[in-house]
Amino acid sequence: MIKSVFDDLKSATPKNHFTVGIDDDVSGSSLKYDAEFSVEGDDVFRARFYGLGADGTVGANKNSIKIIGDETDLFAQGYFVYDSKKSGAITVSHLRFGPKPIRSSYLGQATEFHRMSSAGFPRQV
Image (cartoon, rainbow, N blue to C red; front, side):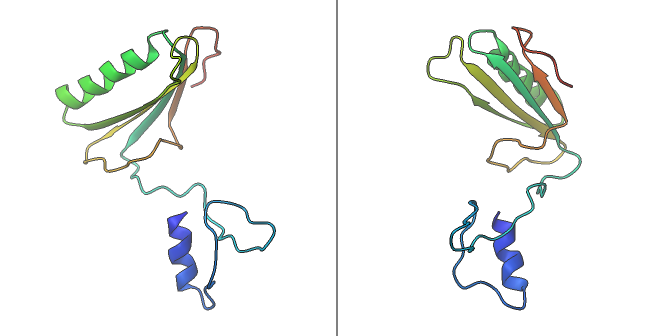
């Protein structure tokens, strides 16, 4: 979305007042953005795992990303989303790793691999 601000500044008639991140259908001041744009290189592997609280998915993914970061030459990062209730709530593990330092500070959107917990969810790859 930030890229859309810079793209607009390069245009012949940049907007003076605008909104980013929402579709302002009242004033029409929203900047259009490319939802597929990514600053990550093609050499970064991204994965997202879905589970149920207390099924072990988050713990297993924390261990996996730690092993990848500690025992390989790859840089690794993990973000974990879970409900405060933990048990029974949906969990999402966002993992990424690659040969260069990872400076991303957001959840992975475009992932190469999706795996849903075997606890009642169908598997998607």
